[in-house]
Every structure is written in structure tokens, then in C-alpha cells.
Image (cartoon, rainbow, N blue to C red; front, side):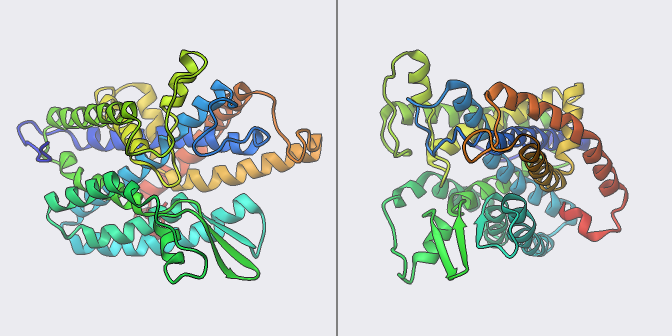
Length: 391
């Protein structure tokens, strides 16, 4: 597979950048669906991987759809870092920008975002989730981007394809490597002191591979890159990833510890087949989600003039603003519902069907469109305000 870009027929800058914003916007809206589920459907919790026999298919596929979000967002983060460097003209500027943003993201995760989930300050538990993982992945990328492109691809592929070989490596609490391994690969707890625990919800090692591959794909989106060649490359990578997923999953071998089996009917067999592990993301998880992400990016480029693409660009142009605001909106809605109707599902307030979750998601996405658009325009207009670029 060649990662080189042809310059036969340059693509307009707006086309390549709109496709990135639109795909980012799509996964942001899908993420909203998953967080609405986590807010109003916690009385029907799902594991990782899910229990196919006991999980309603509508809930299963809604959760499965949300698996697309983190891999695509991390991949696009690497791609965006390359575009930033292409515009700045040197790798030193990219490394400096990445390090500055890391500090911002980690503080945002540990203070602002964690508070939105727990409403507890000072917190007794801090959940180190996707923003934390993106931040640490950026630290790694700041070092890896100095490698030749072929070497960067090799490192990315080796991490994504090979990290499941480490699944059986564990270090007990108190071992010198326990904290390092909990951060890198073994989802677990870090005891800071008697009053504070950290939960490494997103072990970071596989995400380093994903962000490296996103950066390596950057030259496909260069100003003078051939648009049709870019779409062919994206389609080729997407198809290869999905074929690899089907082949490895069919063999029930490497790449996913949870095996699949024939279910009571065709639907449950399919559910078992695509039942993949997110924490940490297995090879099969990344093949399926990144494969679909590449195909979606190619599709969006071909549909760039459609109204739905322009609408998704609004969300994708201010993703961090959307992320922070939607968490507090959901928390406020939940507390309001509890105040009005009480805890109607045991220790939770919740709705009765996954269909209602979809309706709430659509209504919230529509309601947030205008404030997100306003912030995106402010961000575009006021480039003199340095901190806005981090959102």
C-alpha cells in the first residue's frame, strides 16, 4: 500500500477540510447518542464486550455504533496535527502545539469533564477517559512525528496489530510497573491516596498507534494532493481493514479475546460476530471502526455539497466546545428529571426504550446546532484569541 500522494489534479482546500470536519461532526453526534444512553438508560447497562444473549438488539447496535467515535476522532486528531504542521511549515511548530494542547486537555479531563460526570469537587474518583487518552497520544506523536513516514506507518501498524500480544501481561498493585501499565494497556485503578483514586478507562498504548496512522495519512490531504487518489487510498484502506476484520474474526483467533459463536438465530450470530472489545481497543475493534471511518471519509468527500454534510461541518468545527457543553446539558437534564419524577428505575432515573434515547439525541443535537455554530464562527473570526484554537 502506498501512502504517497499524487499532484495531478489538486483538490480545493475547502473540500478536503470540509470532509474532515463533517466526519468529526458525525462521530460527535453519534457520541451524543451514547452519552444520552449513559445518562437515561443506565438501568440497562452493557459490558465490554457486551453480553449478546441478554442485550436487546436495539441497545446492542446503538452501543456498537458508538464504538466508531473514539477511533475516528483520534485518527482525525493525528491527521489534523499533520495539517497544522503543513500550514506552519515545520515539525517544531507541530511538536510545540501538541505539547501545549496536552496540558490543556489533561486539565480539562481531570477538572471540567470529570466534574460533569460526577458532580463532585474535590473528586474522590477521577475517570481518565478519551480526552486524557488523546492528550497522552499527542505526547507520543510529538516524538514520533520526527520519524520518516514509512517508519511512522510501521510503528502505527505494529502497535495497532501487536498490542493484543500483551493482553496477558499484568502487574499487581504495588508493583513498580503497575501504574505505568495501567496507563498504557491494563485498564484499572491507581490509588493516589486514601481520598483519591484514578480510573484508567482508556489505556493509551493502542491510541498511540491510531494517532500515528492519522498523522501518516496527512499527505493525502495536502493542498496539492489529487482528490481522486485520496479517495481511492481511503477506500482501499477501508476495504482492506474490513476484509482483515472478517478474516480474523472468522478464524476466532488473534485480535479479540472474546470469541464469537453461532446464536439462536441469524441476528444473534451477527451480534456475536461483531461483539468487539473497546477497553483497551482490540485489533478487531480498530479494524472494524477505522475501516468504516476511512470509507465514510471517502463517501463524505464525494457528497461534500450536500446539506447534511454542511450541517455536520458545524458540529465538527467546534468539537471540544460541543463535548464539554453537552455533558453539562445532560447532567442538568438528568437532575431536572430526578427533581420532577424521582428515581423511577431503582437507583436511576431512566426512560423505558432505546427508541426514546434516539429521540432525545435528535432533539438535543438540533438544540445544540445554533450555539455550536455561533462558537465555531467566533473561533474562525477571532484568531487573535489564542486559547480558542484549543476548542
